[in-house]
Length: 451
Image (cartoon, rainbow, N blue to C red; front, side, top):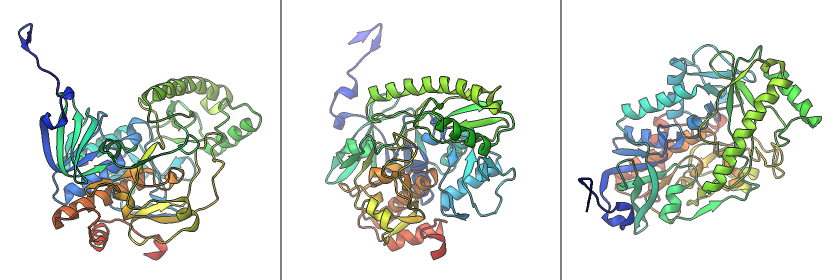
């Protein structure tokens, strides 16, 4: 059949996946290029694995870049660095380039680069700087990048994922792999492959947000702004009652303030709900900027500088792994036999009625992240990274910060590399080998006072 001299054919999308063209064959295909997927790809590529990384966005970074959340939280706790390896390298590279600084006090940051100092506090980065550095590191390590590419399915056989069905600009195709890592945030690969997943209730998945930047703030003092914000909330003068505390800090650019003010609730796994929430949040941004300008002298002459294209999702769907982080684990601080990184003993943030959820408990400290929470329970070649790992939805704060996503990504990618070298599967992998490999590459597996 022809049309104006052009040959046409039926799209592969409407034929069985087995008949789709194969666009690439790899040792590892990583789904999702946020911090978890990025670290998985880097860790595996450095071990000699041929890696492809896939994301529907235009570039890497996930929520950190595309939802305007470049606050690298979870890298330090109580004045000690708790995440090393790829996270440490990334942060130091950003710092050297002038694109990240360690926090200083509340809402401010140190003017000097990190150099060789220990990272003792969380860090602030620039969105564009983070985006570019992630891209540079992927290129340096030979990772094949499939951006502008939507994941639409997966093929499986004998408890293995065999290919990722994708829809890039050139049309539907398969990306075959020996191993896969789901770092999509909401377990899109695991779910499409038919693996078991968990979906949180509305009161568990936390609010959705559009974090915006204000430019032209004068003499910003976060403590003073926070105190006034809390007083206005007590008086019932904060338009969004769910926000009972000020969440904002200085950006690297002079006079620019990063403000986390908006909030809504809805299903992150439904396109129409996402559309509704996006619209509601953008209206909150518009009204919120006007409110801040009228109520805070610091923002009187400020203007809206940036609103992200994508809303920030904190929780939605996760995979069910060979092991799961439970509330009892966090409350009781149960021992972890096979740690791959450090998570936080903290949960219940960003509740749907107020910042602290009704079920939040005053636990604190650190707990290692178990290796088997990074292995999908239904498959022997599917690893998990970032907030896709096996964790009860209520507990996701323990593992969702950028530094923890980088740590689980490094562990997942390293596990795949070792399994390939041993001709084994992820569940069969000798943990002692993985632990040695992670430590040799700078990962921190135990709480600081146990090192």
